[in-house]
Length: 213
Ligand code: AMP
Image 1: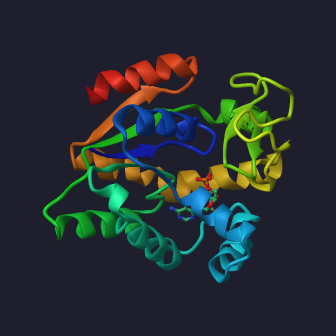
Image 2 (image 1 turned 60 degrees about the horizontal axis):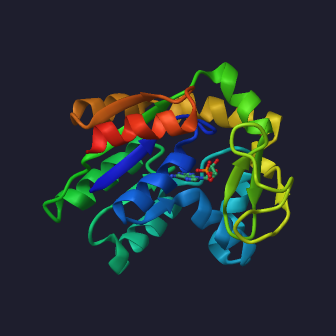
């Protein structure tokens, strides 16, 4: 099964994507996580991506596409995947459709997790991330067992630079301009499904399961 998660930054699509991946035994592919891993390892790709990410801007399509097409070659993608944070622009979506069509494949579902802008800034300021293993938490909605400590690897949790309020506002405007058009794109492809992302995260997951099963 090939699934795309759509929604504004902070809508909770990463949390849902991880649960879907676990349930269906398919990889969770987050371009944001891959960029952050490269930044941590100080690779050339990481250095280039960081310039854009720190400003709340999108990394250029050429760089992003190179990275994701390479990731698809991995054997774990044989039974599908859940994409989180990709595609984020129409050219990225078109490149994905074409790459899949060349192999006689297509996306099965694009799930849009809907959350109004007012809730987003509020949510993101409560978000905490583990820069060591990539786990994400929320101080109110998905708190770690011990304050500021990662449940998985015990590293200290931080507010990511790109989750700071000024960057969030910029990311939201970039989202509306460049990513929201994907909703119509996937509606036209007849694979769009919508879920109410303002609900409790377990309820959001139940709604997603009802779509996928
Ligand atoms: P995320 O963790 O998905 O919110 O991504 C964090 C940041 O990584 C974004 O604000 C972008 O700067 C960059 N990024 C992640 N995925 C993409 C993508 N598909 N295209 C361009 N930039 C991306």
